[in-house]
Amino acid sequence: MPNTGSSSPELAGKPPVGLPLWLLAELTYRCPLQCPYCSNPLDFARQGEELCTEQWFKVMAEARQMGAAQIGFSGGEPLVRQDLAELIGEARRLGYYTNLITSGIGLTEAKIAAFRKAGLDHIQISFQASDEQVNNLLAGSKKAFAQKLEMAHAVKAHGYPMVLNFVTHRHNIDHIARIIDLCLALEADFVELATCQFYGWAELNRLGLLPTQAQLQRAERITNEYRERLKAQDHPCKLIFVTPDYYEERPKPCMNGWGSLFLTVTPDGTALPCHGARQLPVQFPNVRDHDLQHIWYDSFGFNRYRGFDWMPEPCRSCDEKEKDFGGCRCQAFMLTGDASKADPVCGKSPDHGIILKAREESEHSAVNIEQLTFRNERNSRVIARG
Ligand code: FES
Image (cartoon, rainbow, N blue to C red; front, top):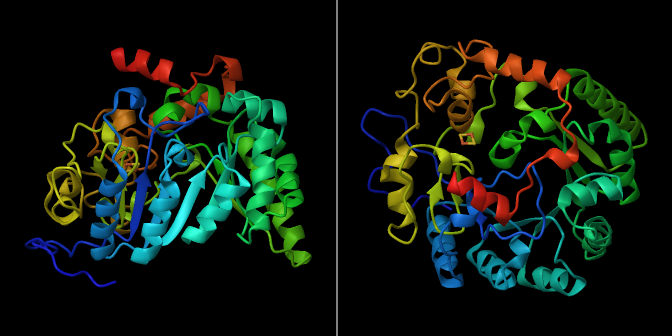
């Protein structure tokens, strides 16, 4: 869909601003699970009232008008929204490719059928572990694992490709072979083996979650062996292995650059260039007060780290800056207290020692699962009170 015009899509002397092709609709922070690596903000319990159905309709229409092509419904757990089928239906009517990102808790056969009828294109179910006990402990629910298995089957039976997401960390990454076997038994089409990234609750629990280098290398090697075997069998399942930033030497081009492609709208209507930006000392606009055209092109928050002019050294003169955009602003802020610094993941950053220290600490961590701080309302309120 073409950009239908903006008050300032091309700022004087700056490269043109990209279109918000990807809209992430964080419908709610409510969630029946309590994963200790959730990327939601630590103080989610004190966030304002959720947008209503009509307000989401307006957001979706405005973003679509500006060129958004894909929408992801996430949360919290988006299934707790009673109007989810309605929202999917409207997104489909507007012409979006629609994705549901869910834990599967609260999903039923009837809901899958209703979502299918409403035009849902894609469902991704996340698992916590291949082992029922570990999965349920991490999820904070005794029924989580059985429910997820049942719903994974049901999703496939309704004609969707089965897309599974396993978040791996030091407590489950050694079971990578079992995790892949489970995915194959479930006839998964795509499996994302995503080593935990450290935002929100994961950052709070980093010492108890970051795998060691040896754990990571072993998991990657085993995944590659499975890939070879699956390829030789012409098996349809695709395994995607995501290495955590903490074991990279160059940062990821987070969000493909600030305000260039991704637009997140949080449950209370705050618009963000990424899911982690809320923690930054930057004012972000709310869709209740402004339309998305203004938010995307003209607001201070969306322009704050756009382009390259904001960069200090070593990013400013780096010949890789157009590839990685200096990495992740949120990670730079979390680790150095200054969001305009180079992402410390980068080996050229003067703060790279923070990453090396975290790797070193992971070698000696004795934090067990029970000692992690779980993402729930009570803990969030305690954290919000300071
Ligand atoms: Fe915010 Fe990377 S998560 S810039």
